[in-house]
Image (cartoon, rainbow, N blue to C red):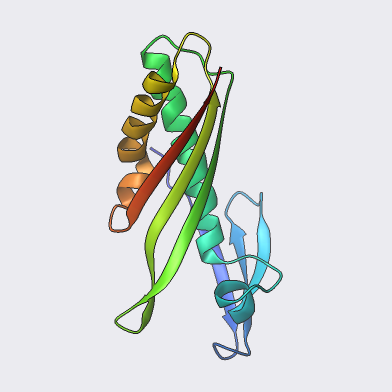
Length: 142
């Protein structure tokens, strides 16, 4: 299995400093700072990249699980919200809320939800992030 990488550089203090993050593939490079991470500043942050990774991994895992049941999804759309809260006075990722919508010919809402729950516990990124509470809501489009 391949090893993936990314780099980050930070210059300055926590509140006044700034940094950049870059994917090893070169597909993304973005700037971040205190405001983009803990407020609503313009730019990205590590948690947003975690959300993207989780949404992407979950969608692929669900597609695979559906395929194993001979179901071919027309589409799967997943939004991941990474929630940061203070725990023992330290910012901590406490939960991730996944919202998944899918159109899967030949399936029904109950099957879709069951397969989505399998993906929630089975995707690579979910397993990595299992220290956080992972919530899932599904919407089946017929």
